[in-house]
Image 1 (tube, rainbow, N blue to C red):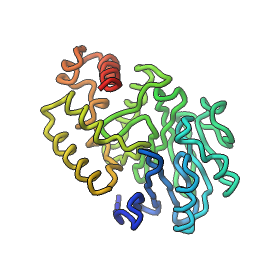
Image 2: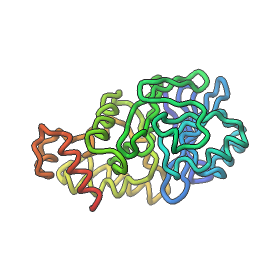
Image 3: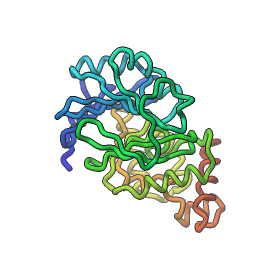
Image 4: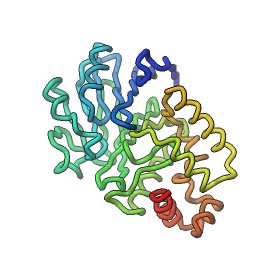
Length: 274
């Protein structure tokens, strides 16, 4: 895989990635949300991964001379869906989203579930069921370039709150993510890296790689840089929510390390009040 970072644009809230015919624009919106526009350079097809800030999306589309052909939704929360209707009206974009949340997301054209596949131009995305944050939450994995757009299921050094699901459901989704290639790039929906690093070090204070990563995150944020995408291999070494079979983490949570779901539940409960 060839990955070239153009670096932050003159607008410091935007970063561009070029990967094997696909371009990804990363941008910030609202207080801490990440947004993504994915562009297939061969066909011109362009998708917004989730859609909440119409102006931010329209600005990038105009600047790049792209036309929005698709909107891929991960879950129904307002900060991922509020701009669907105006964007669909303006660009005629097709809206794809989780079948289990069809009653909560307006204007869905294509309903999908875990195990399905969808196309953007010549690129194909596999749909992964990652419920727990919401009951219908899905993630989009593009295997050729190893992109994962996971909404609020997994974060850099953390994971989403269980607003609707339980520990069993959410852990099942995280285990599906863990099975992806180590080189997978994680594009998550929020900038929570600093807070997550602090909790991760509380759980695993002797993790030297995590200490180095915390310092990197502090430097990135101080320089108005993004902390994502993050690589799955690194998350598997440092993210406690993907390390529920780790003996020291289990002991910290007071749970048998052979009971990963219980370790996960204890971690999520602890993080909720951290």
